[in-house]
Image (cartoon, rainbow, N blue to C red; front, side):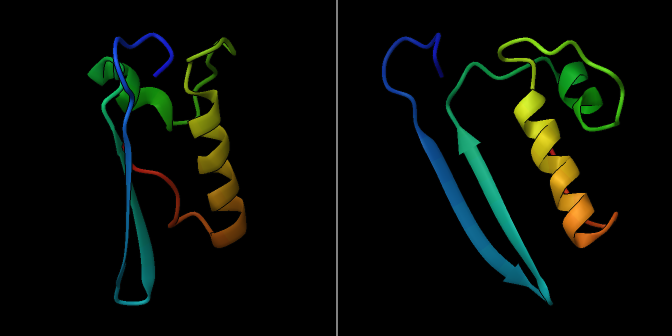
Length: 75
């Protein structure tokens, strides 16, 4: 959102499906290449630089640690 022209928007939607809780987060940011998004959560080493997805990887790892391997983020 930092490098955008104009206002950034973030939309969060939550719902239950069976016994699980889902949170969907959508923004109007610049995004990332599809290949990078596909590799982001697969556990490969990535450079730790600003805007590199480190925050997403951290949240994904913490969800798996807390709730089990069946849980985490999907991009």
